[in-house]
Image (cartoon, rainbow, N blue to C red; front, side, top):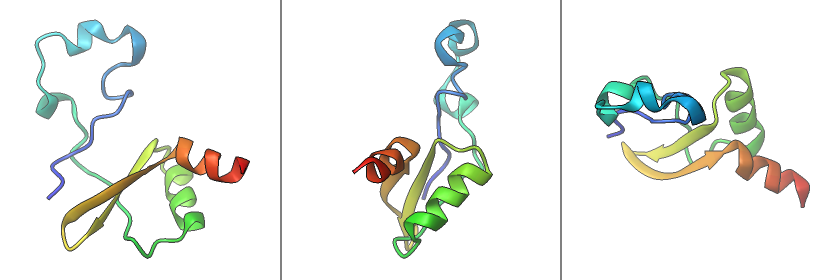
Length: 80
């Protein structure tokens, strides 16, 4: 089960050291995770990422994490 996701945005970016100091992952993560299924198309994944301003999309099946699709993955795919 995915408990949450921790992104660069959650960590406050390059200048977020004050935000991160003394905090746990649980305190900083986003608990409401948007995910995809293995049958989600590349277009659908891109639309989820774009429409919700997300940087990554966990791929799950039967409650188990199979992998993560990132914006960089999609850009690399388009650049081929």
